[in-house]
Length: 349
Image (cartoon, rainbow, N blue to C red):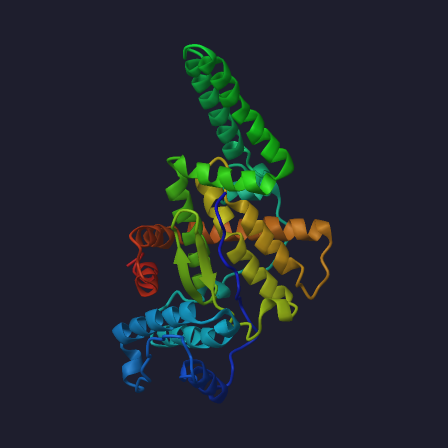
């Protein structure tokens, strides 16, 4: 199972006033008494310096690093400078694709299975259906390996061969017992086992790059990512909401924008592979958002939002295929946030 992004921010209702933003940034970066938090200093730039791409990209890395170091209780405050930096990059004409997808037609509508195929989803019927590939491969490997070992152990002389065969054969029964009594523990083992598949690394990269790219195109401040095995995620800031998701309800426009970011990994995998392995956590994030909807949604409406979001996300990924490919390669080599943004902006030039 691929771990999904940490979805903590989205399109909001408007920016803070200039005065409020300045006070917000000053409060976030000001030293606190007895603070143990070590932050990188972000110098206040002059009006002329703020148009320098190199300085702006350096600022982006700095504020993202500060947010990463901030304690969880202060993450909302530290996300303010991240949003400001993205806005400065866009205003300077450096980040021309930042929020560019907001101008495209992203109105929610009914979407049918055939339309998912039109945007490149190989098997639309498998969307929101958990894959059993890893489970089956894990159980087959356990049964096959223990069977071979039991046969070999049976060749040992005397009672060693007799008891060893039974003990090794009991491993399969133990695995089945764990799966019945503690399925969560078995899921962890299966998740670790899935990393042996040759396509695992590429799946992770394409999955997380899709979250990153669509968040960027929809104007959601991306603050970090990880493609380390077992720690895969993409992080977003809460600055645009100006409030934590759990503290407010979301409008239809906010739900629509953030739903695309939530299912971007599903759309990316669905376009590239026969099965979508990393959709469980993505769908959990989407469900969490739908429960915060200001408009009460029935089960059928929630299913349609899911289908529409996958369709719209796949369409954006198809339109911005060069940007997605460039971002995948940047993340493959462990690029910084600024380098990832530069890869997106330079993709079609």
